[in-house]
Length: 473
Image 1 (tube, rainbow, N blue to C red):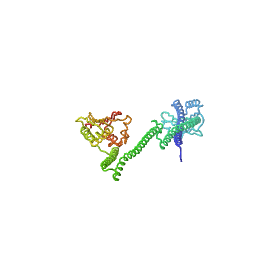
Image 2 (cartoon, rainbow, N blue to C red):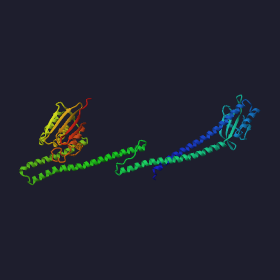
Image 3 (cartoon, rainbow, N blue to C red):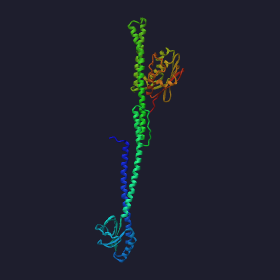
Image 4 (tube, helix red, strand yellow):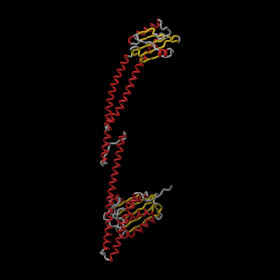
């Protein structure tokens, strides 16, 4: 059976309120009744002590005692209070006022005869009436010779209590109605807030991650709204990341297919030409050399992709050591000089003789090779400077060229996988797959370093790499 949440709220609220009101009304009614009886008993007790004090020392059956009791009886005639005297045999000697059955029981006498206590019966039935009864012992020479008993009918007190209970019932109905209205209002408010969360959840389930709900720190529902908004933000970020990964995957497949197509087409064409004797004898060596170059291009593509994935998945281990920076830059110069000469580019090395760098040797060579090759690709009839220096807590390497430069809006994109600032560079022999700088960025970060690029279109580009030196402990 399905019960709406608002009805569950109303039932739970009203159940608690109803139980609380019933308990409070019963306690209050009992308290009022006890208070009224206590006040009546106190009144009788006060009259009794006054009478005992006025007749102190006289015999209970003397004329003075009778005169005193008669005077009090006249004074109390309008109140309905009766006064009686009883002896040690619990027999009434005198009775003033309405003749009620006010004989003292054995149990009551046992409480009186020691002369040290006053027996108060707030609600005692005598005859056909319910009365408040006070019995006060009377002593002569410290000997209890009887007592004075006072009674007062409780009819008026009962009527007053019934009137109070009647008004109490009216108040209970009024309070219950107000509580019902307030419970309904508050339940509606909470249900509406939960309903909004439910609707927002439905939108998220349908793929809408732009939905937001009101949130606060006022209560748990408000905090739930905050958590919901954070969840949606993370889902949206995850979806964007998944979409980006999917786009990269598609772009990767497209780029790899494109990059593979060119060398494979070249290799296939040359091999077919050789098999069909379509290539002259004097051109065969050139064709074989072309096959070798295109095969190397394929190997570089595979190696760069494997290297990139290893770096992204943290599968490489760096073996850091102190390395002479001059030695490293000289190696880069020697290995790339022939490639630079083909484009009429001169490479200059400027480095302090005692400069050292704390890095993994193989990965450092890989970083500088990729950056320098990139500079050679975009420089014609220009110069490249490889410089290095040390500061207090780091080593700085700069690779500066006089090439074509990079547009400001493209600088952040050069670190992306397969990104090419110049889409026409498909036949360059090194770094043509757009993976080199992406690998460089990852390797520098693995060294806990940083790399920055400054460039001006038509004037050249400068790569600045910062490698931290280990802190002395």
